[in-house]
Amino acid sequence: MLQKKKYQKKSSKIIINKKAYYNYFIEKVFQSGLVLEGWEIKSIRSGKVNISESYIINDRNEMYLCNCLIEPFQMSSNRFSCDPTRKKKLLLHKNEIDFLSLKKKNTGYTMVSLSLFWKKSWCKLEFGLAKGKTAQDKRINLKKREWEQEKLKILKKTKETY
Image 1 (cartoon, rainbow, N blue to C red):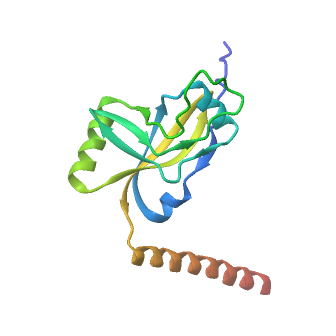
Image 2: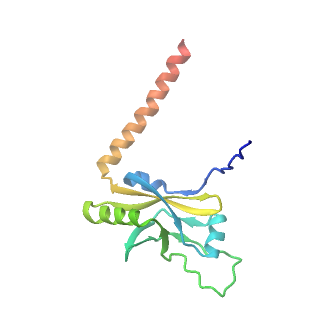
Image 3: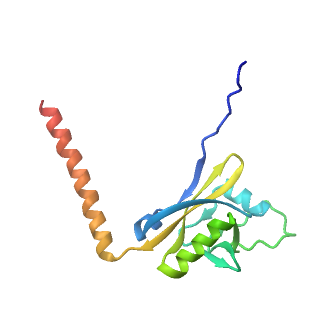
C-alpha cells in the first residue's frame, strides 16, 4: 500500500526581535499561540507589527504578551475599538505556565518575545526565558564576533595562495 505523504509547509517569520538577542542571554525558547482579533491578524499579514519593546507577564496563572504594538488595519470597520497595545493572551500548557512563573519569581529571569511566525494559518509567538546582559558582556560578544570575521578573512587569504 502506498502511504500518503504529509505536507508540511515551512513556517515563515513575520518579525524578529534582534534587540532581545543583544540585550539578553536567552536560556530556553518556547512557542505559543496568541489570542488575536480579526483586525490584528489583517495588520500582521500586512506587516504592521512591532515586538521590540514587548515582554510577557503572569497574571492570575495566565500568560499575557504586553506592549506589543499592532497598528490598526485601515480597511476595518469603525464598529470595533482598536487598542493597538492591548494585552494578548498566550496559549500555553499548565505545566509550562507553572515552570515559567516559578523561574521568573525565584531566579530573576524575564520573558522576552523573540519572533512572530506563521505555522500553517496560525500566528505563533516565540519567546525566551532570559537574563539581562551587562555592558561588559556586550563588549565581549562584539569582540568575539569581530574575531570570527577576522578569522574568516585570514582563512580566505590562505586558501587563495595555495
